[in-house]
Image 1 (tube, rainbow, N blue to C red):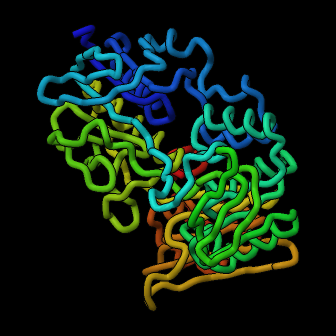
Image 2 (cartoon, one colour):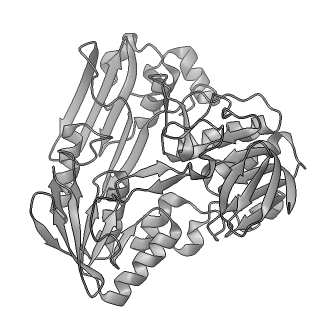
Image 3 (cartoon, rainbow, N blue to C red):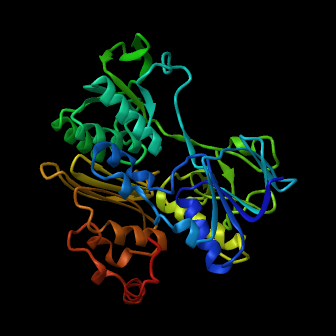
Length: 430
């Protein structure tokens, strides 16, 4: 065995970074080893589409300063892939055949992008996924080398829309292919989705819904078109699959660590095996509103989970309050946010709506038993933080519900005690 660390972290994104911070809040000197298969210093993954589109530079990608590993006393093994976890031996194995030991282990391996196995031709040059810095570099290089003028993005969700934004900046004619009836169907209701689709159309982006890619057509090994299940063939020089990610659980398969969709954890981010924790996109933890355990692959969720895991690995007593589904994406120049339940689940739910189609503004509040359980904001997102805080707190809003949808709604309408806690910084976890 090469070495044994007090704390071993697999991953190098937001959950891993938050875990290091959590550990150091309690244990200033315990040895931390962080292992990542990517060779890069920790960077902000949400920025990769902005990097491709030229909105940020490589220097602006850093999630922490260049000396962060050293200042945090972290032994960073970058460009090292973990292939297997052996919880009985408290060890992990690397692709190079080395063995690393641990006292406490955090698995923060994130997700693996989905490429459908039933689509022919996905091995052609010019077919990409788009979830890492190296993906952005590879797409940029391919576009430059082959003079790509048109692209197909498979998937009309958040990853797809951010990919489209980058391609628009590069002047590439783009078609979005989405299996559902509307874009952003997992995040928005029909009204918000149709507003987003109309805004994209104004920028020349074509959208095909209720269909998906059946085959990638290639000539001389390079993509030239995408054939859809409805029979249409769309010429293109680039295809990006952006239909989501699956929790990267491969390294624990066959062990006693419980896996459902992701690695199942409790509110302390502990797995079913002693001394092993999980956080971020790979973790399946309690969802705040329904109480069920779900994988919620978003940045704030990963940060909270990583912090809780780190503190508890170091002997603390932190608890994860539950994940909340939240999504934010800018559609061309229109900001959007969705949070929680965006469509009524039954007749016991009620909605409050305000819509201005010409101004691309839409506000929707979903309530249940006197409490806000979800919201959608398009264009005007100014009060989204306050609404999100009320959802997290589970506060009864019956006394001021009629003000919720108003543009004038703000802190002044909130109960006095709650307002004091918000102003002092202790009132909401939004």
